[in-house]
Image 1 (cartoon, rainbow, N blue to C red):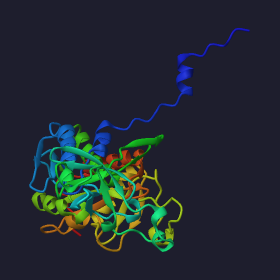
Image 2: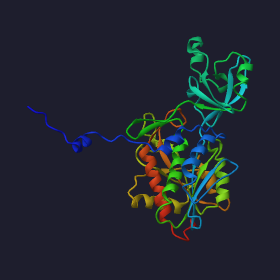
Image 3: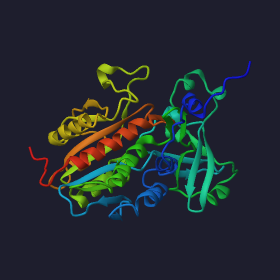
Length: 368
């Protein structure tokens, strides 16, 4: 009996289309930019955004600013930070082992046994974070979390002189782990915190170059957030916006062992998390929610009782004050080498930022 022919159209239906991560996002995620050393991420932003907007500038903090509709009113600042966790070399011993301090808030249980890249003036040096093997520990020592000074980086040399030819005190290092899609639109990366947010604000401004826009909108790729929202401080003072939305990552609490009574309920894939509380201007908050509902963009609500640990805390109180909102992209395993995000949440964040900007009319302000 002859085999039944399958049309190309039918075959296409049977084969689901593989999710494609945007090149801009992938390049930003793979850029190595430990806080205070954001060079590679800056270069990615320069390449993808610099010639796509009406005005583009940088400042002495290393921030990047991309503006559309320069003469518009009101003025809006979107901010997402491009720095990530890292290590910084502090001491080299006689055997050539490197000791370090942390850049940003690390989980010390995650540091040892990692491949790392040390970013030097002459290029990349590979190494491994090491500590005493479990076989050589007492039962008591096995229960302890090692302090930072009890872990080192091994670059395969045998003396201080050899190491000093390759590495200098003050060189930064990052975990040698890149972006990967693991299922559908769910990906893992070393630094979704906060390359996801930085991509969202910059991509939103790239899209705002087309179509009707009343407001002046600037996206800031900010630096040094992980050690105190430092880039956002200067960004907010220099821009003096009427409205601002910071975009960072937030905890997806749908994984095991999260107490929802303490942290709230937030799902990976559930859309951006919209913050509400003292750090948030009520007019900005209500407009964000209204835009999400009008555009049928999924969102989740979060209450925060104090200044958040994001760029929003610095932007809100800059100058005469800024009507500030905060969007958080749900993320699992924050501040680990394998943070997990559903990229559809990032896309919905971009859409919500664009909708917010297009909703503004001349004279709108966050006075209340």
